[in-house]
Image (cartoon, rainbow, N blue to C red; front, side, top):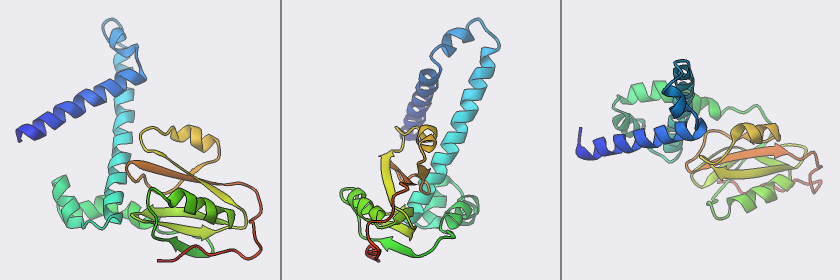
Length: 197
């Protein structure tokens, strides 16, 4: 292991410990005197590992959508191309399957103009069901939709879902995207189709 790798591992370990400590500030003190607090540590660490596994899946999905090969992804993960594809490919393939009506691709869009383009499309009944570098895959509904982009690490997913937001695909670092129907009828009788790629 190189010095840089060791340094990165140390930095990650410290950062993850700080996150766990921030989530449960009393834990460190309780570990000194309450044996059962180790069960809380196990629970928090397990939940953290589940979240990290989801982040890894999102990172791989983002890499594939950005055009990187399974060969390169596998090399970075220390596994073969086939192993990487078997472990991470099924979610990516299933994310492209939508049993909706008419489909379009909003392309090209960037971080600077995509939210305005999604707002316009949403007023005409289109909403995002998937995205990648410079595009959003849209489907049409019979009501208006609104879209939200939040920082992937700052979003409280559960709170957003309680407000009716539906997460769109996997996170695209550094963003997570959400959409929800508004209950309002589309603005025009003739739905304007967003640009196709």
